[in-house]
Amino acid sequence: MPELVFFSGTMDCGKSTLALQIEHNRSARGLQGMIFTRNDRAGEGKLSSRLGLVTDSVEAGEGFDFYAHIVAHLSAGGRADYVIADEAQFLTPEQIDQLARVVDDLELDVFAFGITTDFRTKLFPGSQRLVELADRIEVLQVEALCWCGARATHNARTVGGQMVVEGAQVVVGDVNQPETVVGYEVLCRRHHRRRLTAAAARAAALSPDVLPVDPVSEPSAGA
Ligand SMILES: Nc1ncnc2c1ncn2[C@@H]1O[C@H](COP(=O)(O)OP(=O)(O)O)[C@@H](O)[C@H]1O
Ligand SMILES: Cc1cn([C@H]2C[C@H](O)[C@@H](COP(=O)(O)O)O2)c(=O)[nH]c1=O
Image 1 (cartoon, rainbow, N blue to C red):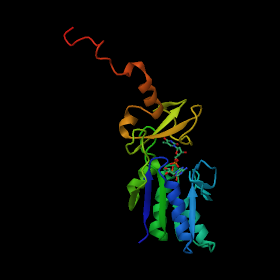
Image 2 (cartoon, protein in one colour; image 1 turned 90 degrees about the horizontal axis):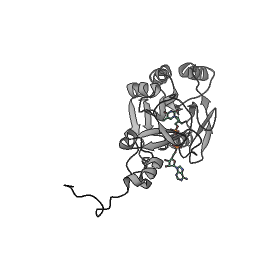
Image 3 (cartoon, rainbow, N blue to C red; image 1 turned 90 degrees about the vertical axis):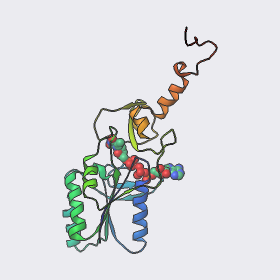
Image 4 (cartoon, protein in one colour; image 1 turned 135 degrees about the vertical axis):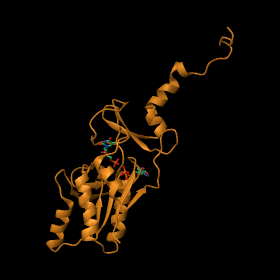
């Protein structure tokens, strides 16, 4: 039975790598995939992983119709055994509906990859629709880690090195960026709530305000 599967996780947890592995394993067995992305950091029409792998893809922009595109491809004698859609958080809810129709009416597996929530911890519309429609939601097994060592569950955005919680939902970018540009950092919920990035935690640790109090000079309880 064909499925719509949503592989979700934070930024930098290996989603695009897994998409490329699924593509590799299936094409090695003679299957033909159709690969789509939107706003990949490597540029238009590319699906890229931080491990250095990259493949060509079809750029699924704002008005792109997945169902019509795939039907046209098949009608022209093309072959398609499965579909991969990376950066699926950027797709519109209508486009996710089209992907569900590809599964149900064209009987193709669709593997969608994306982050669930944005830097404000709000669902992306495309991810929300995937959660609503997917046959299966898979959380990536290689967990990204917060600076404290806990599993990272949230994405923080930094501007000038400071964590922000206001701004446009979509700003293409990456983790481990210099302070001068918009960057991202994955955090556990506790530290996302406290707006404590790795840099903020380092700064707080160095601040005299939080240095351990010398018990000798500390006034006694009753004083
Ligand atoms: N130099 C490296 N050596 C080993 N693994 C790496 C290296 N750089 C990145 N990775 C792995 O790649 C993952 C990011 O993969 P990627 O597919 O680009 O993530 P996503 O698409 O989820 O943002 C990291 O979590 C890490 O596991
Ligand atoms: C949290 C968040 C992320 N983005 C952008 C930043 C990247 O270009 C992609 C995520 O890519 P990845 O392969 O999963 O690392 O999404 C954004 O536009 N808005 C956000 O809130």
